[in-house]
Image (tube, rainbow, N blue to C red):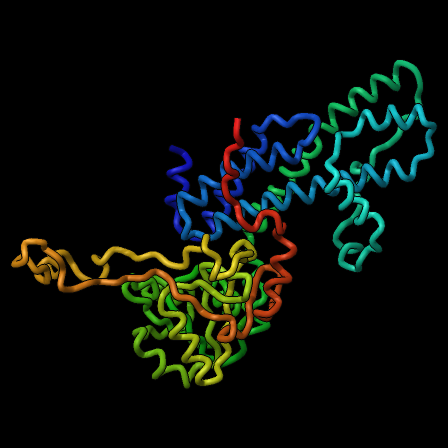
Length: 406
């Protein structure tokens, strides 16, 4: 019941945060064996992740968070393995002490050991030196005491190591949840670099990220005007226009069909996104592809605001990607108007009028000028590099494993 109620939450940010919090709870409640701890956590996250993705396949942020959690587990497991190998390599102990030391370390898979070995032999990059500050608690310390005290300390150390992977994963998940919560603020901080005095900005529909971005520029004493396309048939642009006026911004509300007529007066198009695909394409509210084509025709920059939780490692042609969904025809016609168009003479009551109400558009990367994320501004061609930092290749497809034969 709780899971079903969470999936009713609209918006990629809220859905991402709720998904991460649910998976954090799953990890904290998973009983981890001493050996193959990462495998136990991965299996638990996969089992829940499959249900989450199947329950709401259109909300790609759910799958993004599931894959990022799987990536976090693999990275933390690799980090512990690297620290263990580095500690064993630096310590000079006798053969008997080596045997006792190996008994205290979890049994690592060959793949993890090989990856950890490559990590220790590979020279550190500048980014690694800046970001991966060594933690004194991550490197195992050898005890110099002897006798019973050494045995007790090793027993306690064995118990603590069996819990360290889960602890590190939960800490990383806490950071992920914090990043999701504050992504609007980090994106808004960059507004003053992109919006200048006396410009005209065009947007479509309603996006909290766009709202905070524009208001942040206003707070920095930028004077500009905003054209808001109403975003029929849901007319989310009406809500955005009202919020912008409330916050003191000069706002002009236009119909969607007026975008081409007004685009020549626009200096920049700033919009939100439902998801950003691995090729740099954007799944966005319906109508934005029309806006992007108008912007390209008049050489107007088309800027997309998206938090890192919206970066999807899949491509639009992947079979597991559901690019669109059809909303209720009632948003276009009321039931009375629709029933008048039914053909009851044939006895089959087949409609003569079909109503198609798609939710999303796909904007190809060639129409996007710039992505602004919580990590900065990036060209569409750089999206795949960002995705490589957030996802593991083994987790690009989260699907249930076939049952093994008994």
